[in-house]
Image (cartoon, rainbow, N blue to C red; front, side, top):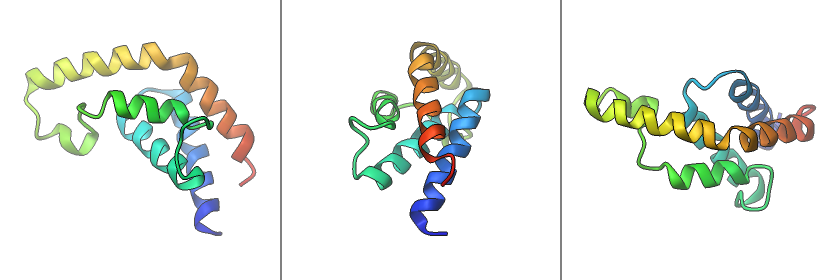
Amino acid sequence: MTELEERKTRACELAKALLSDDSDYMDRVIEMWKIGNFIHGQVWDTEFHIFGLIESETDHLPTAKVRELCSRKWLAAADMEIAECVELYKSQVDEACNEILVKYGNA
């Protein structure tokens, strides 16, 4: 399997995960953004566009690796902002995930 095929397969795994629950949301969004950049050179105007948008608007929010270094107060505020982001972009993320599954599901 080529690296491109591996990334497409991983995009499908992440798409299924994002469609099923919101855990590790920031990490999944960032990874989708990175995969989209790998596949297309940049995510803009592709099926990965929404992940680039979310990543750029939320780059100040903690990923799973950074959370242990944050205060409870900061995490509470960050979690509220993440929840708002999930709600705001839910339909666009779902649409992108479904498009990725259709496009790369046989990768």
